[in-house]
Length: 170
Image 1 (cartoon, rainbow, N blue to C red):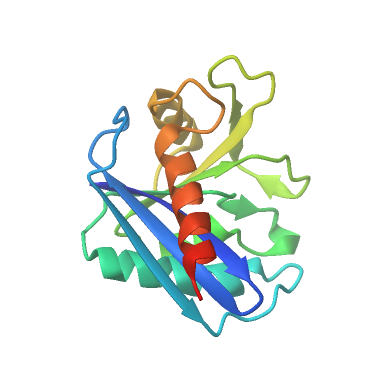
Image 2 (cartoon, rainbow, N blue to C red):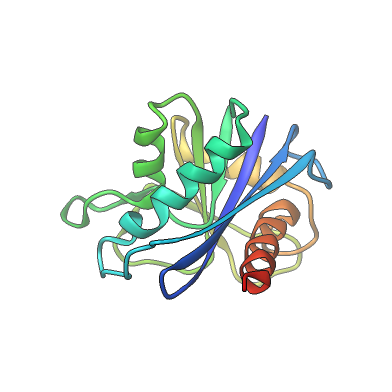
């Protein structure tokens, strides 16, 4: 099984979403798991993973499925002077048991080991990276993901579901 993840924030509140699917080409989720809570630390430049990683791990735990691959909105690796990207932190936190595929929407000058790919008719690429697999294989998987747009259908669903869950909070 695979998972597409995203997190929404408002001050110290979060809502994380895990979209579960079986095949890279799937158009529909097998399950959508959300988790909301409080106590998220503030954004700190260069330390984004400290804010997002606990939310991702918590929603993966709630899904309680062993995933062979996890897709995130972001990069896996940063150049040596910047430390690790969110994807590398997640891969290590999972003990290397799940491949982590990063799909970033914006170029980042200090990101490394990624492949830009064009999906659908978009003139702008997404930047794909991987932990536990070569980045060209991660890029091939993301290319196969369902959807006519730049962002794959199930990753977009994770984003929309996290935002929707967050907006429903009292």
